[in-house]
Length: 140
Image 1 (cartoon, rainbow, N blue to C red):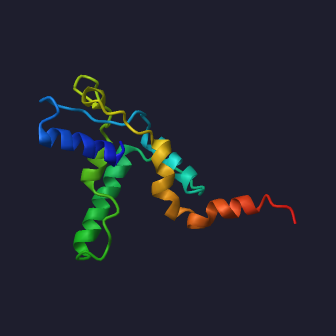
Image 2 (cartoon, helix red, strand yellow):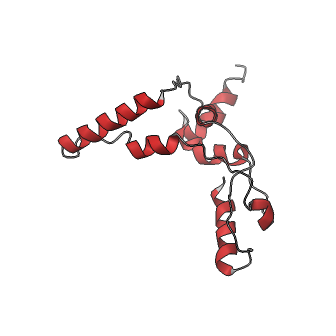
Image 3 (cartoon, rainbow, N blue to C red):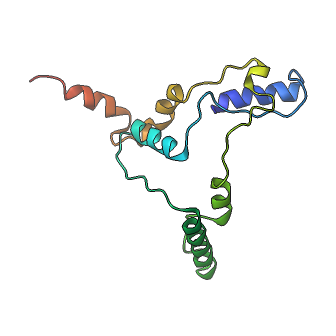
């Protein structure tokens, strides 16, 4: 979900303009973690191999990272924790049983409209990526 949509909902909750209850707030699209990574790679114009790791292997990796981090007194970075693996093992998809953005009168913003604005600094040529791409089409 777009942070501005969430902020608008939070303001409505704090000011009392939203009806009481439990809200499940999510953007208009659903995608897998792999799908989200692919979208991000497309926007930053990079190609990377996305490899799925079985949960048991992820748990072992997280345990090894945590152990290495503790034994090295923090020198080895915590690239993955058991809590992160636990979080990734559960879908973060709204059930539809609770109130949502529609009940607040908020139209959630689509990912495609905000991803390029957030991720352009991570393109190989940053803000100049589009200029370089269009310059390739010029005839000399």
